[in-house]
Every structure is written in structure tokens, then in C-alpha cells.
Length: 285
Image (tube, rainbow, N blue to C red; front, side):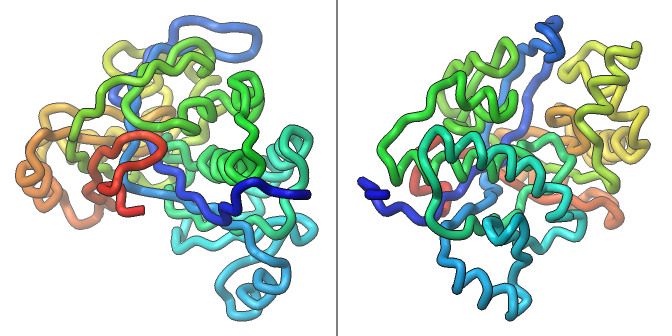
């Protein structure tokens, strides 16, 4: 295959929700109205030669799976590459049909925590699509992106946005600088289980309609929310289906103070919003 533009590596930013309202159902999918933004936490997807992937695996730097098509690396204790492999294989089959074959091994470097509601399950898929789009010059359609996952159309562009429908409608909004303390409750929350509990009656209003379901699935979620409040946070929102709980600040010093006031047993980090794709220089790419 002849490529127009040799792009070998791409970063995809995590997202956090400022709100999530469930508005109904369309077939087996829920319709949503949510506000989201990108933050400076990234997964990276790189196309490397099979020989290089084998070298990295021998050095203990990655695990090669999927008949040698994928390599996974992460410092996250909760990351299990074999659990991620089926989605990557399914997405690659569709991507190969749309763009053609990727000549090499797709190395996925995972930094976005799994089961946190921050787009980690889709970032690698989006990275693969962006790589192939840049290399072939072919732009993916919204329908194609949606076929890969309901949050893929948004994750493909990132930034400040309102997302409606089943994820296909992405309205880009002006960038807003925010500083965010994110607490990662131990155990995470499974997205499908959260929506099932919501359908079964675990519903709530407020900034995230899935909060009650996530609390029922993981008692560490309400504990994280309480810890942020007690540390001085006024606005807290659970991201996506959980489990990450976020506190938003205009002032970085205020965010740092709340971060420092959290009890040491809570796993947390201080992030900031970034603009969408292509990311600005401030995104540290």
C-alpha cells in the first residue's frame, strides 16, 4: 500500500464529563445529552515493525498479542491487556476494511485508567483510526466512528463539546481552561453493568444520571465524592459511567490545595483541560 503521509504515532486524550443526562433509548443504546472536555492524560498508539515489537517484548517493555498484530504496554496496575484485546481486534477488522491494512504492529501504550469513565476503552481505537486516516488521507465518516463505539465520534475530535444522541452528534464548544482533581476509586465500574442498573431503577438526577448505579456497584465511588467535598471541593461530578470522580476549579492553586487535603489512601491526580484535536502546544505533545 502507498501512504500519502507517514505518521507513525498519535496520542489520544482522556475525557471527563461535566454532566451526563440519559434522555431515552434508541434500540439497545441509550441516548444522552452530556458535556465533556479533554484533559492532559493520554494513551499513545504507534505503528512499529514486527521485529521491533519482538525486541520490546523480550526486554519486558510490552506484551504482544492478537497473532502479533498488537503490543500493549502500561504502568497501570489495573490494566489487563487480554481484556482489551477483543475490542481492539474487532475495531481493527472494521478499520482494515475502511482504510486498508496497517503494515506493522500496533503498539498501545495505556495511561488512561480502565473502568474510570474517561474514555480509556476507546482511546486506543481512536488512535488506530487517526493513524490510518493520517497515513491514507481518508477521513472516517461519523457512521464509521459510531460503529466502533458510542464515545468514539467525540474522542476522535476531543476538546470542549456537547454530545447528544447515541454519541453521533458532537457540537464543539469554545475551550475553557479548568483545573481538575480526579480521584480514582479502587475497583472501577463496568459500563454495561452501570447502564443495566440504571434501567433496573438505580436512577438519580443531578450532574450525572449514572451516579446512583455506580455507587451501587462500587462503594468506593461515594467515598471518593465525600473525600473531595470534605477537602473543600464545591463542584464534583463523576465522569461517564464511573468510577473517576472529578472536582473542577478555575484556579490552579485552589485545585492544588484540595488535592493536598485529600486523605493519603485516595489515588488522585491533578489534571487540566486541553483543546481538541489537533492538540495545542500546551498539551505537551
